[in-house]
Length: 68
Image 1 (tube, rainbow, N blue to C red):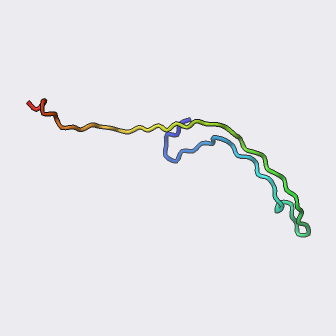
Image 2 (cartoon, helix red, strand yellow):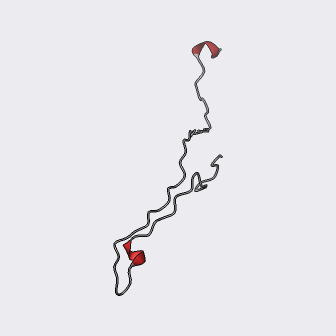
Image 3 (cartoon, one colour):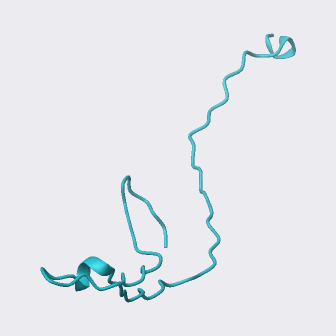
């Protein structure tokens, strides 16, 4: 995958599903001390390469030998 445009985005890995804390289970009469853990996200190893493209020009004055 190449990112060629400014502000271009793509999904490399998906995140996990969030769990439920106490606020999810509370009511007006009950505040239970329970929770449900979330699910883990995807894991991977990646190698990122930075490509640098530049316009380069050389400007030099002639050497004394070529000034004839």
